[in-house]
Each structure stands twice: as structure tokens, then as C-alpha cells.
Length: 128
Length: 129
Image (cartoon, rainbow over all chains, first blue to last red; front, side):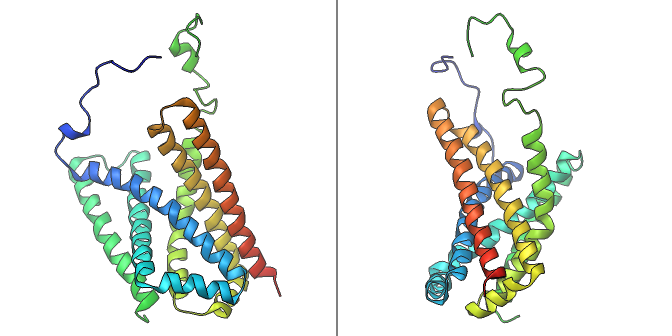
């Protein structure tokens, strides 16, 4: 089917940025990011299964500052996708579509992501 | 899709849908999502507590049947959810037919390969000497 020169309806750029659209996009971006996180997890598991030498190499990469930045991004993505995913499950069941509810649960997702990410890093590196 | 077919697009779409699977993809995406809610909380806590330990401690942890069971469950639900999610992203953004089919095949094969690699690593630690 020739789709080349048919007119297009207005796309994303005509809308003012809103939390609902930002979070929808972030859900997809963090999802793709988490796929890379699963690659990282597989690498870590395979390294742990193949002996101390290789494990220590992988461990050193992940303990470096750039490794920790990546793990921080991975952790934040994981919790954002988890919390926002709960909203998606509620929407699938037909709940939470009122604008005030969307705003409220959206802010809750953001707060929970920050708290859970920092908490996880405290457990990991803060000796909690 | 042939232009010569006498069937209307609606008649073709009714019943089976273009993927011949109806809501199967949607349902599995939600099922794995629900499974991943508790598994992700467990995973994050466990892996965070392993962040600064050495290899023997990691292997000891993985030798616990509960850890191994939950890790394998996390991997199964996680990789499945990942494969389904990436499939939607590919279908949304890759429009050329042969490129789309290539991406979908690679998505399936790479997801399965990585899931098997991670599973084998867990089993090796669980059962190894």
C-alpha cells in the first residue's frame, strides 16, 4: 500500500508536554533499557558460573564509577517500570482514568521510584 | 495482502486478527507483568545485598534452592516480558517489511539464547560441585 504522500494528522509536537505522555514514553524507554539490563544480568550470572577470574573482572567493571552509574540507571528504570506498570495493570482493569487520579498516581510513581532506587543503593553500597 | 481479494479488510480482520492469535500477546504480557511484581522486588533486594560480596558468597546464595527457584522464575518471566515488549516496539517503529521480519526473528532468537545462557549459569551454580 502506498503510504508515501498521504497527509499526516498532527503528531506529538503539537501537544504541550504532560505527565501522562511523558510517563508513557518513559515506560517504553525504560522497558528497552531494562532489556539491556537483562543482558547485563546474564553477563553477571555467566561470569559467576565460570569462575573467580572472570567474575572478578565483571565485578570490577560493575564496581567502577561508570559501572555504578549504569547500575543506578538500571535500578531506577526497573522501579519506574515496575511502579508505572502497576498503573498500567490498574488501567487494564478499568481503574484510575480520572485526570486527578492520573496526576496523583503519576506523582506517586515518581516518588516511589526515587525512594526505592535510593533504598536499593543504600542496601547495596551503604552497608544497610 | 492482495488487492484482488474480494473480502473486505474488516472481514479479514474479524475473528483471527492479523497475527492469528487474538489477545494471546496482550494476555501473556499482563501475566508475566503480574508475576514480575513480587519477583522484581525480591530480585532488587537480593542483588543489592550481593553488590559487594565475593564469588563464593554469590555461589552459596545461588545454591539455596529458594534463591535458584526465584531467580529462574524471574529470568523466565523477565525474558518473556522483554521479548513481548521489544516485539511491540519493533512493530511500532520498523516499517519496511523485510527489516521488520528480520528484527522480529532476531528478537526471538536472541531473547531465547540469553534466557538459556542465564538459566544454564544458575543451574551450573546450583548443581555444580
